[in-house]
Length: 122
Image 1 (tube, one colour):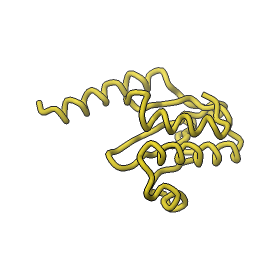
Image 2 (cartoon, rainbow, N blue to C red; image 1 turned 90 degrees about the vertical axis):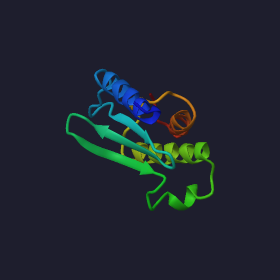
Image 3 (cartoon, rainbow, N blue to C red; image 1 turned 45 degrees about the vertical axis):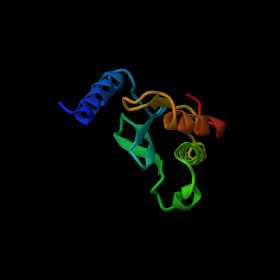
Image 4 (tube, rainbow, N blue to C red; image 1 turned 120 degrees about the horizontal axis):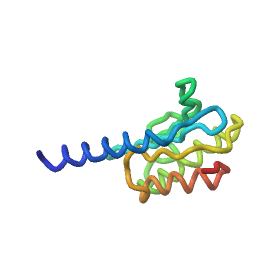
């Protein structure tokens, strides 16, 4: 098995293990973070209804210009701030953080810190 395939498999296994415990409802929806090589995506999801309440990413039209030219961690912090602003405006202040099988550090930590700075609690 090549190294990339093994890494993807390990992340998928961790993701399943985490998702058994992390569940979002109307009171505390789930903040799910996905990061690819070049972009980062955040969604606030109500798992009971099965719908995304708020979303932000580095490729979204309303954010794309703000993150252009920024380093990845700075862009992730901006995404966290934008997502938190949308959530707080929509009446959501408490969330459950889903790191999607990734380690808590780097861009994930930057997104979480940005969201906490704008009023989300988790």
